Length: 321
Figure 1: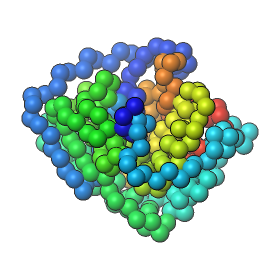
Figure 2 (figure 1 turned 135 degrees about the vertical axis):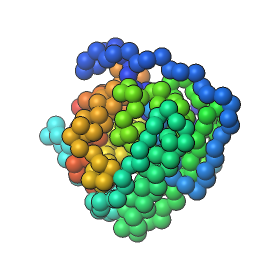
Figure 3 (figure 1 turned 180 degrees about the vertical axis):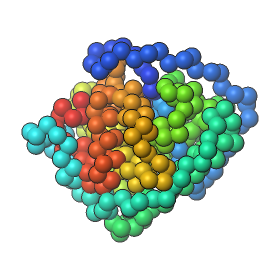
Figure 4 (figure 1 turned 45 degrees about the vertical axis):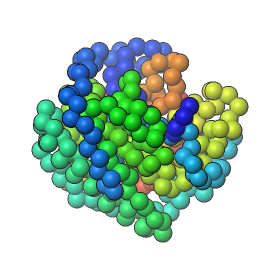
């Protein structure tokens, strides 16, 4: 594989062993829009979307730190409690020192999924809020934080992590250039529910969380451990821990904007249903966790609002299946 990045499974995949319930087919994906070209917005926050692709699974960027994460044995060790303990992160995880997310004022603007300018304005507003929230958290932990670049696409293009769009991928985070790439039309097409603003925010928060992992050194440690893994099953297990941590970290942001966005009972259920539908329903592709675990870690982050609670690296094995 040529580049490192992060994939998030497309919503609405049906069938397969282990699915909590049969999922309805997603409407056919509309064709890509005319070749309007790319909108590159460097220095701004990133966006991540339905069909999360973590291109960080592909190849470490030149000069990337290779500090070792918690070993596979440590990552697999559980407390035997069968519940999310929230005791901390991987060994040396700096996110343990950032403290609980403070409330972020982020009233979501009205959005029309059929209107490009409306979608872009919404996505920029939310990612501005993500910048604010995570810069503050890193500052509390005495760490520097560089926001990712944003790349909004309407037509095909190239990144250091590969060409886009790719099959089943509407967005991805590319660690090689700290870029979050988003297909503005694709995020709408891939939404199982027709596009509730809170589910766009969930996808965005998940992809942004991979950048947070990168800035904290977690991705470098994860890649080192994954490279040292002796089997495909162990590599997938580590990848699930990384992806489920991203769900949880994204959830901490959703908790922080709960009042202003807002996220009420109905919006929360939309988010959790979206998380469920992005789980591993293909027994040959076990990289993101079951739908139930995806929802569990997302809700845990929303409730705790503390990055230290997103300790997927030492959680019981059944919580990262």
